Image (cartoon, rainbow, N blue to C red):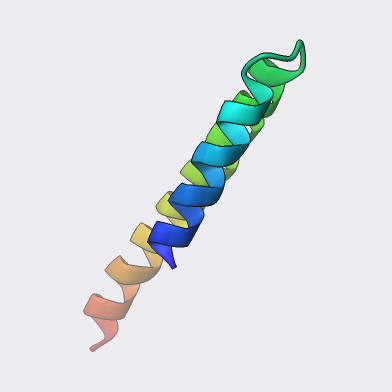
Length: 51
């Protein structure tokens, strides 16, 4: 799943890098990626505390 996400992210960044919206799209994807990673970290932390 992670490899698929990274491949998709890289493809999207490379395609939008040349357009004017590229910086905006990149920032949005960075935010989404950060939220997903932070959420997974919090979930992992709580799973270990409860187990």
